[in-house]
Amino acid sequence: MLPFLGIYWAPSEGINLGFYTIQYYSLMFVLAFSLGWYLMKKIFIREGVALEKLDSLFMYMVLAILIGARLGHVIFYQPELFHEDFFSVFLPFKFKGGFAFTGFRGLASHGAAIGIIIAMYLYQKNVLKESMLWLFDRIVIPVASGAVLVRIGNFMNSEIVGHPTGTDFGVIFANNGEDFARHPAQLYESFGYVFVFLILYWTYWHTQKRLQQGYLFGLFLVLLWSVRFIVEFYKKSQGGFESSLGNLLSTGQWLSIPFIIAGVVLLLRAKKNIAS
Picture: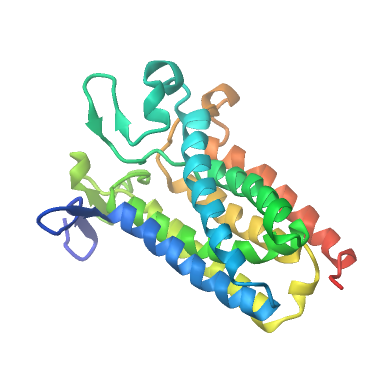
């Protein structure tokens, strides 16, 4: 294999500090939440929202993403865990076949999206008192930036891999015991999310679209889930219910379609929702 075409990928589990190993996936989540907090702080300052409400938002988001993503993965992709190893659904350990620490590696972005929607409803009702669309139009900016980092974490973990390329080009995920090249689907997706973030960031800070309630949220739904839909063509199947629908599309693609449709509806209605 030509070295400039194929990348041999066999990273360690994380940064070894001697007394503790910081896993790359966990590190990406920490960076994602930290960057999200910074971005929302800038937005709150611009909008004149009290910064003490930011701490509550941070907690709502952390719980929503972790719980929603985990439950989403189990419900959509691995429902057998509910009866085979119930406590592993909620804890970063496996109990079946011997106790072991696994971390929360089974996380689904569709579940995280649903979790965020529910959490933001509760946050808006109990803390912020702004409209739901006002909140979603702003929270999607840090969410998009976090998506970039999470997919990099997936790449570091050699998970959610792509289809074999059938050529020398690609990434050899040696930690998975493979000796052939695959599409680095995680990096494709992360790269796409960079543009989603930049478009949302620029639109919020440099246009008046933020005053059209629902516009940024709708744009986010269309852009992010379209990226996900396209990248799924290069991604190894993660299972789920796709086989029951004839394998016409992957489970991830079926789950992306409702979000894209919802985004189009929001964009069409946004002109009627001008914030006062």
